[in-house]
Image 1: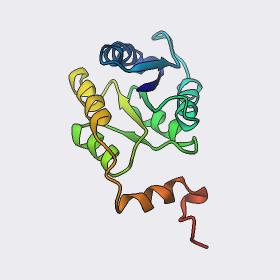
Image 2 (image 1 turned 120 degrees about the vertical axis):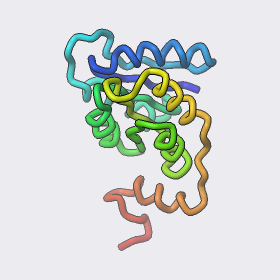
Image 3 (image 1 turned 90 degrees about the vertical axis):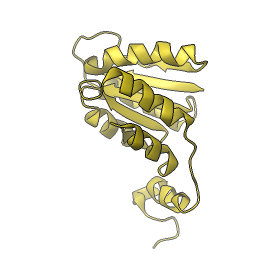
Image 4 (image 1 turned 45 degrees about the vertical axis):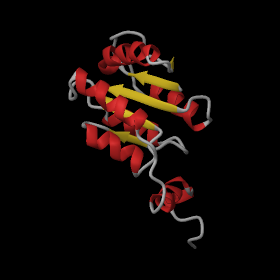
Length: 151
């Protein structure tokens, strides 16, 4: 699977770790930066990664920062991206199962390394459940967040 990766300086270490971890498991990580721990503005890196997912150039994306909050907000401004801030195995599982999250955000300062790897693993393995969630996803993806049939 082709996976977009992006971080700011506060998520750089985990991004580097994840790139190697994903490659070892047969995935193709696509690194949108940053490339050091020097202070940067996360939207400069997260937006291009999110756009790659939305355009289909990458199947999924992982964005990282200190808390992951700003990175999730930046990714979710791109139409077609459903980015979930994940902090536990259950949050990652439900992000895929119920929300069909195509991007996740992780906080390097808040999530221990081993848990971050498990979150990514679970998110990659969990399928979208479909069913009652399909209409909800359609509302998220519709202009204005409303049902395509709503007036």
